[in-house]
Amino acid sequence: MAKFADHMEKIADGVAEGYQKIEDGVVEGYKKIETGVVEGFTDMTDKVSGAILNEDGSLKTGKVGEAVVGAYKKVETAFVNTFMAKEGESAQEAKARVAAEQKAREERMKADAEKRAADQQAMIEASLENAKNAGKFHR
Image 1 (cartoon, rainbow, N blue to C red):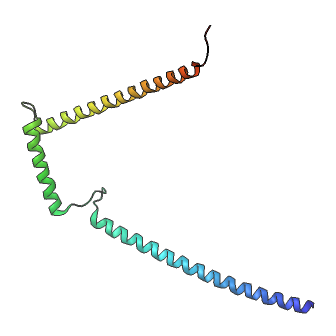
Image 2 (spheres, rainbow, N blue to C red):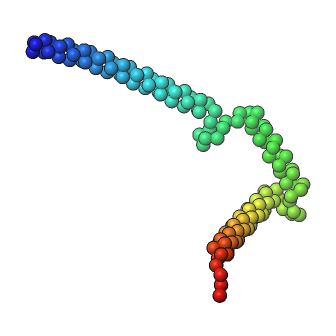
């Protein structure tokens, strides 16, 4: 019986060793596929990025895009000169002034919102305190 058990153990070891070799081969194959896919995707994205992005990360516009941006800037400058510039003020100065005014408005609105939030919190706390004391009798 011992010989039979030894023989069965050798068979089991051989089968386990065979399965281990298959597993190692499959895992190695998947690793090669994964590496190939990742490297291929990386190469592709690098090529696409180089084709459509400038070095600073902005999109390349091409001739049509540059013409559109140029036309927009002309219209913007004409609008600022006509409707926003004060007497003797250049378009650049008017743009800077308008931007500063906008920033001041945003800061004022933020401060007002913070004050309203603080006032609301104070009213909530007072209301909660009143609710706690509502059932108490004072003598």
